[in-house]
Amino acid sequence: MPRKESITIEQILETAFAMTREEGFASVTARKVAAKAGCSTQPIFRVYKNMEELWDAVYEKATVFFQDYYSLYPRMSPVPFVNLGMAYIAFAREEGHLFELLFLSKKDNGKSMYDLLNGDAGNVLYEINRARAEGCKRPEEVFMRMWIFIHGSACMTLTGDYDLSNVETLAVLKQVYGQFAR
Image 1 (tube, helix red, strand yellow):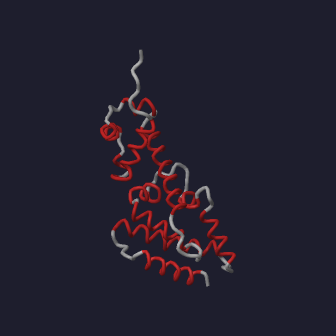
Image 2 (cartoon, rainbow, N blue to C red):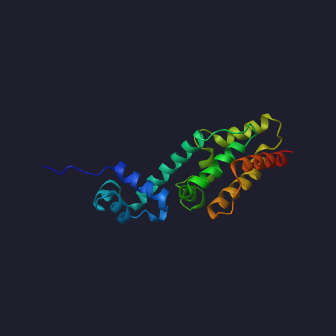
Image 3 (spheres, rainbow, N blue to C red):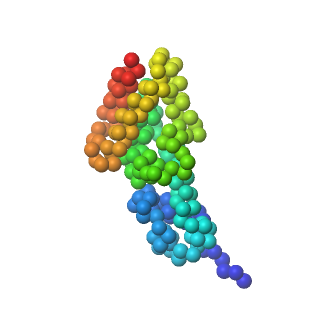
């Protein structure tokens, strides 16, 4: 009679994902995942051909996590691109290791930063259309300028150099949009 498997693919993925959130993507090795999951490396390689396949699964889970995070983030302003910026900066502050994996690493699983940000819901396109509806003549250009500011601010949270509160960030993003949308 075959032995009952005691660890599932979901448990392995959850363990690797939790390690990425807590310690960073570089911490996800077969031995470390096995130790955290309370098993040998054998179950990992029974369900994943190799570590690259597990890393891809972690990356995809992080992508979904970001999309869920963004969709649930409170909308604070009717000004185009401001809610996008607020959520992105907050994600960097609250989920630094996942932010690094998705937006700062060379690992991309064939998705550009724009693809991740736009997501299945068309987040960026929605904001561009809002800007256009408000009379912005070059909303794609405004997005690029806003994005440089937003991404820079988010990156600064990782180094501890961004110390603006949410209220201050909201005000600055509105001001920056006003300057760029002229």
